[in-house]
Image 1: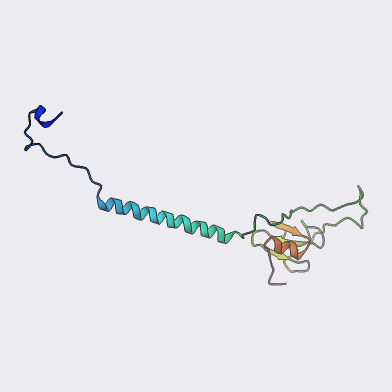
Image 2: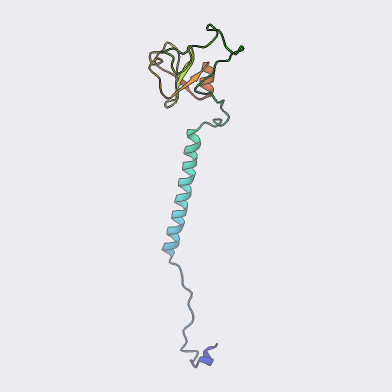
Length: 138
């Protein structure tokens, strides 16, 4: 339909206006998008900084090690012993604190006290490979 068909003179008909979005709203949306993008980027940086780069490929060390026996029933001298001091690890194993990522050698003052949240290692190299550090106090 045209203006003439309706019966309104073209001079009296108002031109159709496009609705515009306020500039302040557009600016606010852009600022919010940039802020969220920056936060997501910084969060990803923090996550990668906390986890070691090769933590996925780190060797898995179990908390309960089974003795390697050649015969079905090893002799008493061949079997690894669990003592009250070394519990839950075998005698002579290194204890790693899973919360603080610190390992304790046998003979350390804290060694006999650590009973919970413990990971057992056969050598210091295993503890270092699992990203544990040595105890400062001996």
